[in-house]
Length: 99
Image (cartoon, rainbow, N blue to C red; front, side, top):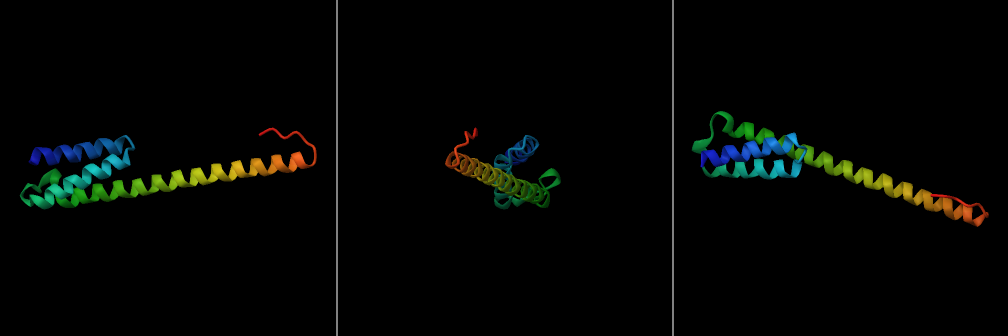
């Protein structure tokens, strides 16, 4: 079981290194649950506080990535709306507007 928990933490570390924050959160969360179920395995690299810290960092990075995607989507939508507005205005006054 300790080897499995270590594998979850390593997988979480690899996911973080690859900016796969969803994967990191999943793996660290699973490692935390396993440590809660078998606290006798918590020592060294599997110290619960260290795994919790990794989980918190991954969760924060995941939230930041989601917010960044939402902002980018909102910016793209606003730009598209502005392009449509300009094309409509240009069309109304007889100018050929290229988007």
